Image 1 (tube, protein in one colour):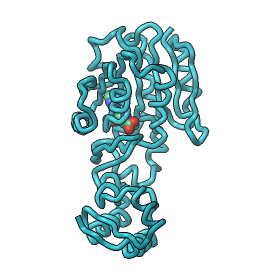
Image 2 (cartoon, rainbow, N blue to C red):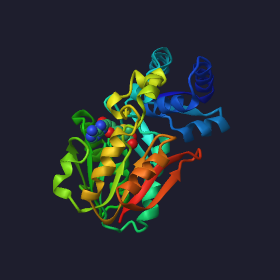
Image 3 (cartoon, protein in one colour):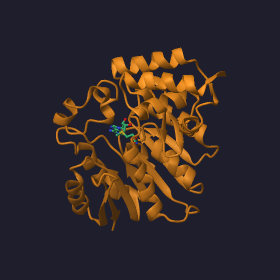
Image 4 (tube, rainbow, N blue to C red):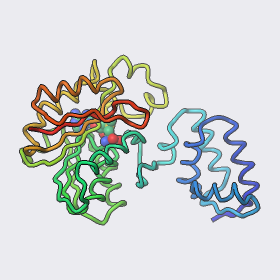
Length: 289
Ligand SMILES: C[S@@+](CC[C@H](N)C(=O)[O-])C[C@H]1O[C@@H](n2cnc3c(N)ncnc32)[C@H](O)[C@@H]1O
């Protein structure tokens, strides 16, 4: 541990932020590499005469920040860590950085399955870093979950994240194309969640470079119209869900009506479009019969 005066630290921080970048990314760097949390920073803002303790020196933090500004590489990949809900997750460029808006998926589940003692049998298709499945496995300790992904490298990150976050063994991981690893679970699932790749090709081509050049294409591109994977997931869902089982999907900002129609066509009921905190119809949910 290195100790420096809070005053010196605040001057250094101001200098780094004056070069560019956003406060949120800088906070991730300070927390993940420097070992200084947001609440530590709030405290020194109130008492700038104190001392702060750093896990790494300011030169190292500055060099990571400079790389971030120069390359536009997401700070989470440079630090190897991201924060999502109350989880601290390992991330590499093999997994999508879980987005804050996706955090709401877990709240949607909490609204449907109100008792944390419920024994839900759930599957997440396309787990990436494991964020959603890990949050659910922790919140419902008596439940059983299965998390899948087409990319074995992504699954390995998810497995590491689960082992680090939990002492439980109620989450299993399988590699494969959407439903194919779940053949033995036909008719058994209470809940299926997915945040599949849903970006239409023309929009994918124009994504900001910090996304397009660094995050995995397989996690983002949803075919020509963005709905390729959502269609496949919805069409086969009735085979895997129990009667009255729930399907919860995240979609692109303008896809919810189309996803709703796909659910209706595939005999789902209780269909609802759930808005994210920006008022966008980000999630579409339904119940199979
Ligand atoms: C948008 S990311 C979501 C990751 C994570 N669930 C989250 O919310 O942050 C989509 C994930 O689906 C996976 N994926 C893409 N195509 C797939 C397929 N055909 N079958 C299974 N998983 C797939 C990607 O590897 C990626 O991890």
